[in-house]
Every structure is written in C-alpha cells, then in structure tokens.
Image (cartoon, rainbow, N blue to C red; front, side):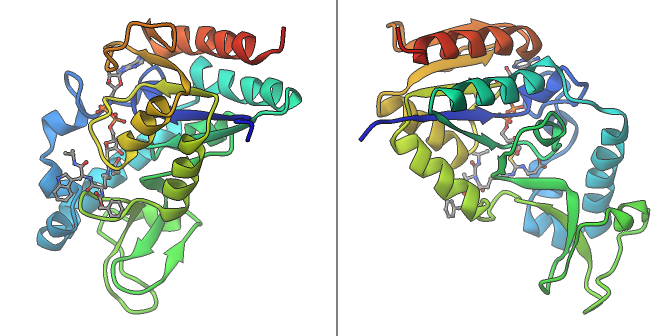
Length: 242
Ligand code: BV8
C-alpha cells in the first residue's frame, strides 16, 4: 500500500505571528486564565458569563487578524503535492479559522470560535449574530445558555477530525508539525503516532520536542512565518521523484 498521504498538524504557534496569543508561552492565555474556570464544562456551569466573556474577547479580536505567510504556504504545498499524487490532510488544534482564510480545508479537532451552540439542546448557529451579545445569550429553542462551539478539557474532540487524523497518521509519507507544545491529548498522539510509524517529520517551533537526531526528523527553529515556507520546500523536494 503506497503511503501517498501527508499530514500537517498545527497549534497556536502558527497563528502567533498573526498576533494571536498562544496558550503556554510567556504571557500565554493560560497565564492569565485558569483552564478549569474558562475551558471546562464545570467552569461554564459555575460561571457561564465569565466563560462567555473569555471567548467573546477572543472572538472579537479575530476581526483584525489575518493569516500569515505560514498559513499561506500550506495551500501552495497542498496543490504541488496533489500534482504528485499526494493527499494532504491538515488537522488543527486552533479555533481561529486562519487556515481556512488562507485557502486550506482543515479538520478542527477542538472546534472553532465562529459557531455558537446550545449548552443543552442541538441548536447551533453559524451566523455570528450571537457574538454581538455582551450578556451571554440564550438558546432560541430551549432558553438554555449558548456557548462557543469549542472542545473544552474533559470533552471529546471532534470525532471526524480525530478519526481522519488517526487514519492519516497510520499511513503517511511526511508529517509537518507546526507551533504546538504537544501537551494536549489525544491531539498530540496523532503526531507521535505518525512519526512512530515512519513518517518523515519536520517540526517548526521555537522549542524542539522530538529528541530525534537521525535523518527521519528535521527541527526548524524559528517563527512559523520563516520556517514553514522552508519546511514546505523540503517536503516537496523529498516527495518529488528523482
Ligand atoms: C479528552 C479549547 C477524552 C478551545 C482546547 C483530566 C480530565 C479530563 C481530561 C484530561 C485529564 N487529564 C488529561 C486529560 C486529557 C486532556 C489534556 O490533554 N490535558 C492536558 C492539558 C494535560 N484532554 C482533553 O480533555 C481532551 N479530551 O481527552 O477526551 C477522549 C479522548 C479521545 C476519545 C474520546 C474521549 C480535550 C482537549 C481539548 C481542550 N481544548 N482548546 C480553546 O479555548 O482554544 S486545548 C488548547 O490547547 C487549544 O486548543 C490549543 O490549540 C491546544 C494545544 O496547545 P498548542 O496549540 O500546542 O499551544 P501552546 O501554547 O501549548 O504551544 C504553542 C507552541 O507554539 C509552543 O510549542 C511554542 O514554542 C510555539 N510557538 C510560539 N510562537 C511561535 C511558535 N512556533 C512557531 N512560531 C511562533 N511564532
């Protein structure tokens, strides 16, 4: 079975150069907020308005944010690889939709900051209208609190993203990991599994996470805007038949 798959796995670091704070770096989101207060079902139950404020502030910030060169390099690589018969799958942990704004189709493991859903019934809104509310909005169907359509700690990641990511990790020729601390499971497990099963791996980060020093792995230290275009060139060259 030929592995004509390429997996691109991204985290908050790819959007840092667009001005979005990461989670676990200096001055990261988790320095200023406690995860259990704003990113768990229990935190929402205890103080829904605090959670709404946390996500509304992050949602409203996106109005002035645009994709950067790292986001834009990926659809170019996707097209080049598709001409070589490769299928590129992008799994992101991010909820900012910057990959989509740059023209990529991505699977969102942890949801997104665009849609709003009911905390009780199946109501989901895709129109952005509820984000205008300063007061946490109520469901028009059952009157329960609405919430961002993101995956909190203790909640099951997006199943489609998880299983497509798992399938791709089982059989991929190359893995590009961009801007993630690999701290969150089961997301990080996808990247480790792909490498473990032989994918040629490039990590673009400020900090190296894989302690591998053979030719199956390359670490590109630096900002994603600088390292991702280089990584895309390396992967394209490696997968282009001689
Ligand atoms: C699950 C929400 C079961 C939206 C996020 C106890 C109880 C319950 C669960 C657990 C538990 N203990 C452990 C767990 C599992 C838990 C977990 O992993 N906890 C960790 C923290 C210990 N996971 C879960 O709860 C998950 N669900 O386990 O369900 C299950 C599983 C499988 C099947 C069935 C059931 C759900 C996890 C989802 C949590 N929600 N986000 C939001 O608010 O955003 S996670 C959050 O972390 C974000 O989504 C974020 O993307 C993600 C990962 O962080 P990173 O993206 O890596 O960001 P970080 O800041 O950490 O790192 C940035 C990196 O970029 C750094 O390496 C930095 O060096 C680099 N960088 C910075 N600047 C740049 C750069 N790189 C390049 N250029 C730059 N300029």
